[in-house]
Length: 187
View 1: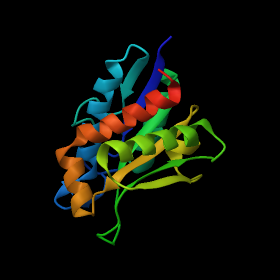
View 2: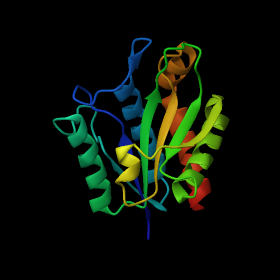
View 3: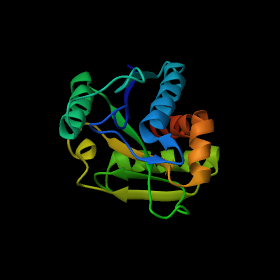
View 4: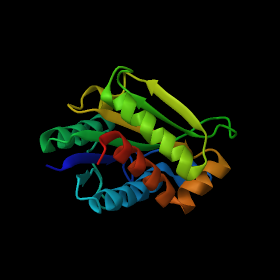
């Protein structure tokens, strides 16, 4: 039976729930492209079945921030996903802030271990610093999912170098996440 991976491309193309902006780029556009590339990699492996929260770049989920989050989580839960991966770009007032990090609801969880594998491989494929796994119990997509959920901050959209790499090579980020998922699941 295929392992069901739900890829949540964080944020909507327009408000409500649009993402961060930096260096002339929008978070929602970058994570959409990384998600599509990641889905293609997973679909090429018969061990996986994939669903995207935003199957098209124009897909708008919900009429408010809270409804957008609820609909994404409900879609993954009702589909019976085995793993939930939420893609984001980080932002900071410090333009020097750089690297990838990820969040899980608990450190003693499958999600935390999966996130560690994803971050290891993101570092290998992109060269960006591995800022490590962190626990966040206040994030809706980590609290309300019925499966292990990892929120991945690919890099800092506010850092010119990170932003340029995410924009020009979304495939590297997709490849890193894919390798992390394969390593964790053994697929």
